[in-house]
Length: 323
Ligand code: MEV
Image 1 (tube, rainbow, N blue to C red):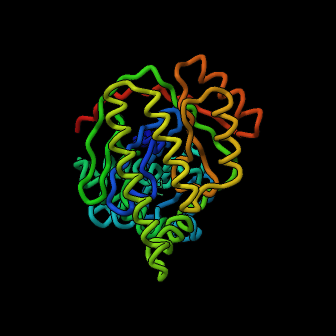
Image 2: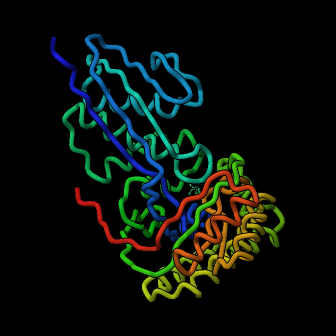
Image 3: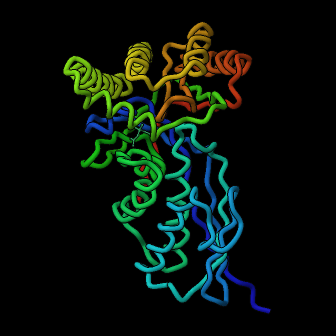
């Protein structure tokens, strides 16, 4: 009996070092890949034309998928049409170790893995730009007004400097610092947080909107300062920029009690700086440790204070994806 070929597509999570929310307003942001949190998509061809999906939230025919998978369903149909493979059915299994709705780019990472596996099945080599555009098809359904930051960063194997409308540049640096990423265990609310910042930005009260636009610009400046600190391996300056960014994000109403608590605990345990990462209102925070031993102390402290999971991410970026 002939064994069916198995196709595979992978991607990973991301951590925004700085620039979340302000990136929506065309300010730059810096993000790093989190290789430990991954998505694996596996595709096995079927003999009929149907598409079956098997993932954490649903197992069955694509046409019956729940609303929460609408973005992926639209993406799959679009790819089948563009790649001219509508007459070729398949079983698609998606496994992810990226916690959902924690600001780690889970939805974009699932989209990238799906795009890669279907492109492979259809014998199509997609450019970075095409892959990005397809990811945005799914992301613009999952999050209204997505800046494209998540789509760009979950597909890159190096740290990136991202500016909406201009795309990304990869960054190369090697510092002694280590980021501790900690999950509050509380579901974030990116869509609502982005909408609330927009309401502040467009407020009828001129003072509120002026202060908001000043805050957004300052986040952009801090992102530039962080890029410089990374180049100079100045982890103390980097930590200060992270602390100021968190204060601004709090003023923009996107922090939460759980995030603030883990941030305080991390700083008391020796972090040089700490802030929320991603959309906020829950999800994850990041703390900058001077070295691995300090990162360990911070991890122990935040886990004791309620973090449900932590990761360690050295502040080193070398690999550049070639395609
Ligand atoms: C979410 O990971 C990042 C935000 O800036 C939203 C976006 O860029 O689309 C909050």
